[in-house]
Image (cartoon, rainbow, N blue to C red; front, side):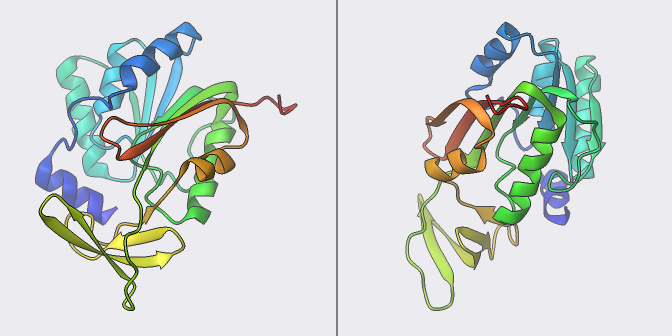
Length: 224
């Protein structure tokens, strides 16, 4: 929570434009009669505002109170409404069973160790109606070289950043704006395995080749 509050205090709205596939996702959700939607890890509100603009009964939850405050202001400026809460997305969500028609989560769910991510997935399944939709993006990155100190060096452009491995497929930056924030690295097979309770699954990579994108529907109680 501390890291994200500091990020929002320093930078304000971290993202302004919706994720590149959101326009397509809105079309799919509207075509399938989706009305009530949750943005899990909503940050400073880019998708809460976008979905509210498009007529969805929109909810958002994020651990950073600063992000929620920015979202509230953004909604007010746009004369829109949404139900917002400060909360940890890796713990029991403050919503009833079968409450949402869809859950979206962009660049948020991978920020933990896999055991906690699995608990979050169970909560997504609990609050979704049978047949409800998920659209989730995950960090796409490969480990380069493991050093004896358990530090990874990766290069983006001209910048090098140090990472410490804390668990299988999991690292935390030891410097920079995301210092101390866990990152779990998904791949296509892991996405399919962890979301085995979803049907009509589609997995693709965004145009920047930095994130996996997953779209699916929760199976009903008979597993079909």
